[in-house]
Length: 167
Image (tube, rainbow, N blue to C red; front, side, top):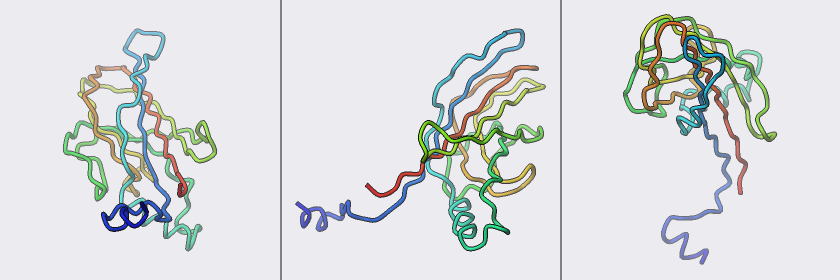
């Protein structure tokens, strides 16, 4: 079976680490007291820019610290996600929110949670996690079905990066 897999280009014996981003959301409408769970709204891989940042950090954590990926931004862009993305397509224009960084359900999950309060009517369709409050390196850009918001609505974004060692 191993020989057949190699001949078909399906060699599962590669020594790889896989990084997968998962974005979940909850919404609290103006006047409501509780958030409503929207569940997982996007599931993708990280950006090339983040992978390059990770490699740089392994060489010099002083100039490329890893604990800076906590700045959440959202927007109205609908262009398909791409691993070469470096920014949101159409940010909503507000300041980025600083997420709380914690370990996820297991030791191989990085988790950042931030809540944004909107001050206008928008159809939110994209989210990004960045290394700085302005510009910075984009770890992951997610595109999803529109979450319509009006003034004072809040979306709580939960981004999880699952790092799986070789199987």
